[in-house]
Length: 177
Image 1 (cartoon, rainbow, N blue to C red):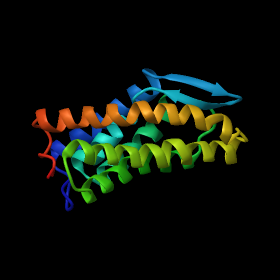
Image 2 (image 1 turned 90 degrees about the vertical axis):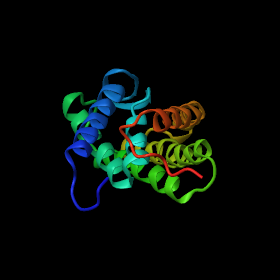
Image 3 (image 1 turned 90 degrees about the horizontal axis):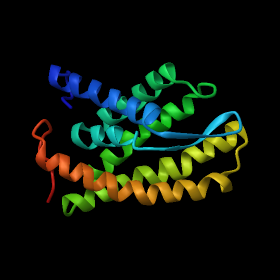
Image 4 (image 1 turned 120 degrees about the vertical axis):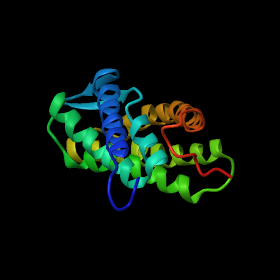
């Protein structure tokens, strides 16, 4: 993403990623309520957030994550709005992009490491911790499902991003060694 100003192309790509995030997370996923709040969400809604960060930079990933969470809540709320989850969504786009840019090696393994950093820190630990502290949901009950989801998401997201970065010419070529 251009550091000084957004081009029309970048703005359109950000809007596309936000809309994909909303559709994949809020509509095309399975949401399991635990008590009065959403405890588990099964789907691929974080892939556009991760991909925006890796392909356009950490700031773009954070913007897509935050806007996707805010607009998604406005369109399809479940439970009360909590800014903690907007922060987690922004972090899930920012952190993998930073890790991807700092890592070295083959592109797939850099992507794998980037996805793992976001999935493990944000989805596996941070979100369940928020659910425990805000709503009293037991961390021990949420953690196993999050680990299984991360084991599925990490290789799928890395492979999908690797294919898209190599084949789709809308994005700058990945800086892979």
